[in-house]
Amino acid sequence: MITAIVMIRCEVDRIPEVAEAVADIPAVSEVYSVTGDADLIAMVRVKAHEEFADVIADRLNKVQGIVGTSTHIAFRTYSSHDLEAAFSLGLEGD
Image 1 (cartoon, rainbow, N blue to C red):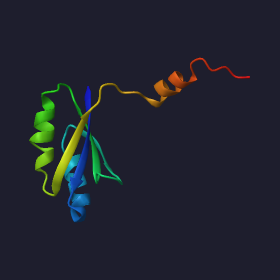
Image 2: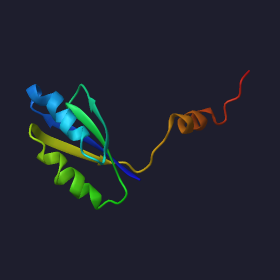
Image 3: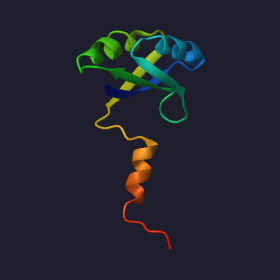
């Protein structure tokens, strides 16, 4: 599974409707309302890179109320368990 994190800017008065429309796209697993430069963040998961064009360019970017997106493709996924193990390497309790 390949993951993309999509930062979405949208018309402020349409954030709830945009979030629901984006969440209804099959490859979108979560949508977060956030602070900062983006209004929403969507997690998109597909089996092949070519599917991103169908999901992001052809569907997500056409949701009424979206004014811009920035897409970040994930190289690797780390779970909290993996991070805990990595940070505890070489540390010994006294």
